[in-house]
Image (cartoon, rainbow, N blue to C red; front, top):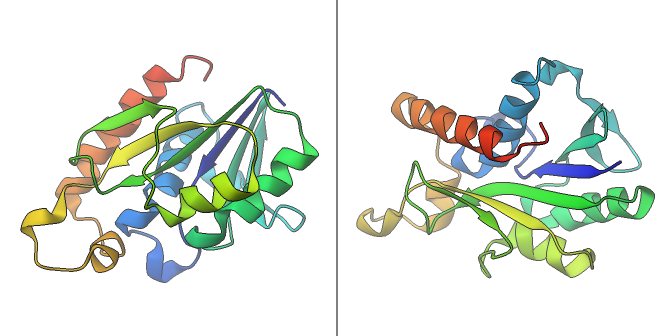
Length: 170
């Protein structure tokens, strides 16, 4: 395998449309836009993840809950050799509609920190803005676990499309 693309999120229907599951949503979008079906993901017990192989790419959605994502990613990294690893996740510090691809990552994102602790390989972050909630009087955890509105979903689909364009190997 040449590429690993990991979408971060939480398993379970109660988290399905939450801001914290944007990594899952983006990976599903990427898969569907290369003419596959997100329903083709299968559960891999060894990786404790839902996976989909396509040519030289492994798409992975950990089933470990966000804060333990490193466990699933480390299992895949120890099994395969990847040239590049991409981690897709929500970022409270970026405004809705913005995204950044690079080697920088927030030091307060528990899913990313879990991966950093368990995977020695460097990875490329795909940080997707979910809005800056400083003007909202709710704790960050409640905000990220909140449901995405219809308007936010439209904006995010545009972001996902731009990310697909940036990932030229897809």
